[in-house]
Length: 112
Length: 121
Image 1 (tube, each protein chain N blue to C red):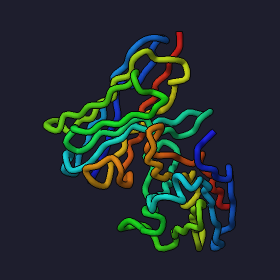
Image 2 (cartoon, chains in turn blue, red):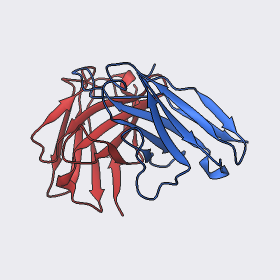
Image 3 (cartoon, one colour):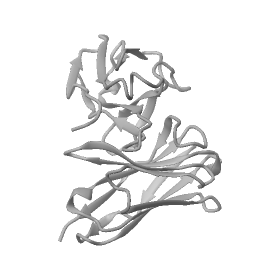
Image 4 (spheres, helix red, strand yellow):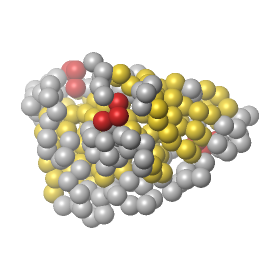
């Protein structure tokens, strides 16, 4: 059981938008501005797509966006493309002695 | 191009030890803190340990403290994870991760592909 809660799967058709939620607590997501999102394709290294809740690294499409409300962060992918099909997971700084960082369980995105 | 490549995984008996290595390339290694994360089917992704760019600060998850030791050799661009007293529940894919700056409290901006550790008799 992961510290951050994500839906196990989401799906959408090409061109549509989807949103993946990541729910934590006021000790992690709700306490620090350090939430990031990663795209993970099988056999590949996870790839950073959103950091510090809303920031996009250089080279990442503006179809990917992040937001936060309280202790829940969200990743939105607009204009879905077949290449977006992958696993997505969130990560947040927790800053406590048990674990500095916590992760979501991952969400499998299927592009129909 | 920046890259992290893990090595050293494999099959080990319960109670045994293993040392994982992660070789970095494409950036100034000592400028970045490094982290080890593992992924299991049951618990998902779990932060294990972090080490600052200089190696002067190290941190461990409570769940593994005492059995894991992280170190780095900035002259070789390698970070290590020494794992002792291994248990079946340590079976996982182990990832090496680069931090955005020299601390262990910055965004993870580069991951390796992982190395599989299997603990079984």
